Image (cartoon, rainbow, N blue to C red; front, side, top):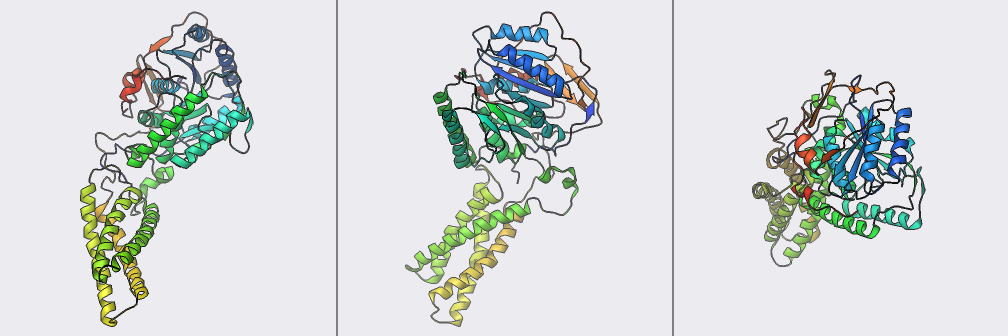
Length: 496
């Protein structure tokens, strides 16, 4: 259910159409920090692989994270020698900051990244991005923990990786298998809405992005990969693990309090455009029924426990009224958050007031049942009272669900879209791609890779970007309104 504060939902996914425009389909970002030795061989190897195997136009973007060695000069040389290579210089550290900045400025419909050591076998790159091109999935990740993956690494890193993913499953209920593999891709229309919701600018960026996407109902495709550990990795394991745990706590708290606007990146049920044409079928009815039944079962147990306690201190009518009142408040709060997906504090008092009206109806049903039982028997057994109350509560539960759905928590948004709604309009019939200085606009078909041309020779300049600048100033898609990135994205850089 969408709330009044939710800006909107993404449209159903569609296959990117083929075309002849020159804009790259895939933009592979390689974030680097002091990688003067590995950068050149990595980019040349990746470029050669894409030239031989990738059927569409592509770009390789080197995102320099404020390197202090000769990495910027190496990046400039590669940009001058290879036509499909571009470089960006950021003056602050942080892998997440680099990915968000470059992804925000890119005009490619599919955005990916991989670590500079190329630990992941490049044969997994096309299977990684194919589900995004076809419209099957929203994000794709390489998984070293899938059954068919083949991984070579030390016991220490294996233990840390598996422990971290167990923590994610236990604390954030994550269902993806590998959050830390440096081999991921995302559709650009999804990134435009998802990236402003991600706060982290370091190594936790990947995990936070995946958790938010999964909780919002986006589809994450996992690709088993062959992976060989880099023994010369400069990642500080203890510092990274500490920052990751802090990020888990922050995201878990945000999810628990409902402060994340997950409805902003929701998609239609089934992701099929035909679903939007179905009439007279209540949206989310099956899910709401399941949630309501679970909450109702727990509320009934809670009510019976309270009734048994109050019954020892008062008569049946008073015990019933008190138990029903307390359980009704808890029931309304649980259904508001879990069943009907209303987040935040807005309207909470009104919902509780309406819930008390529903409580009054339930009280009339149960009290009437008790009165009828007492009229039939002057001293009914306690077990008989409980049986009558269970039956009465079942009847009240059906009525409560109908009133909750139609009156207390109605889906007032329907098909309404206001000025704050984020909507991506897909127009397959517009066969144009335009690139303007300082910004990008994309409309229409998927461009094919142009015929092979000799590498361009000569000098090239490296584009200078400040963190957050591209997302704030140069990302101008004609069909989607971008929300600003987090203000603290320009804070002092994170250690790697």
